[in-house]
Amino acid sequence: MRVRGDDKFGDELVRYMPDLYRYALSLSGKTTDAEELVQDTMRKALEMKSQYREGTDIRSWLFSIQFNSHRSMIKAAVRRRTRETFDPDAAEAYPVPANQYDYLLYTQAEELIEKLPRDQKQALYCVVFEGLSYQQTAEKLACSEGTVKSRIARARACLIEMVHEPEPQRQLAAAPRM
Image 1 (cartoon, rainbow, N blue to C red):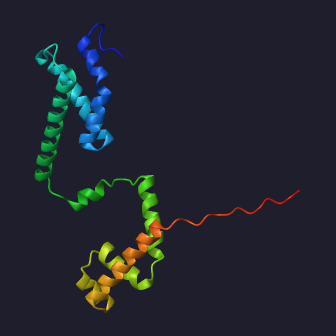
Image 2: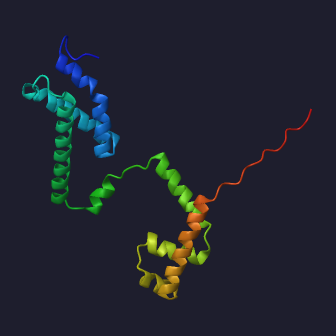
Image 3: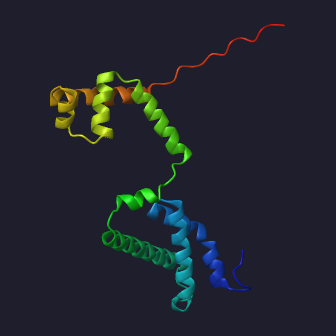
């Protein structure tokens, strides 16, 4: 892939795009942010082409531009967050659809929680899903706070055991002989 005719600078930019993408991915952690960061780096490099001196390491120069772009993006995001206030009504107006993986994890977690004994399940739901404190949960379930903590600890241990337990091997019935 060439940029324009005999444009050596453009060819070098294209040559280091995979390296820039990997570096951007390590900086941002998300593919969409990494792609945006690489595009921003390329745009800035083309704008600053006159500042590049022939013979210097273009790869290092590009990585410096990319790192500074990343820092600028983070600073802008922080400034945006500090100016914006959370409005629950606005958040509900734009729900983020769950992907298949999220749904699968949710249904698996729900199935595992349903397998817990009733007292552990009740304590877990009160604290985790309803957001009640141990004290409030103890009052709701008519038991001591220590009992609530114990039930949640046992529920947690049981869930961990269920997650790490290998699934039983399913055996297929032998095919009938003809």
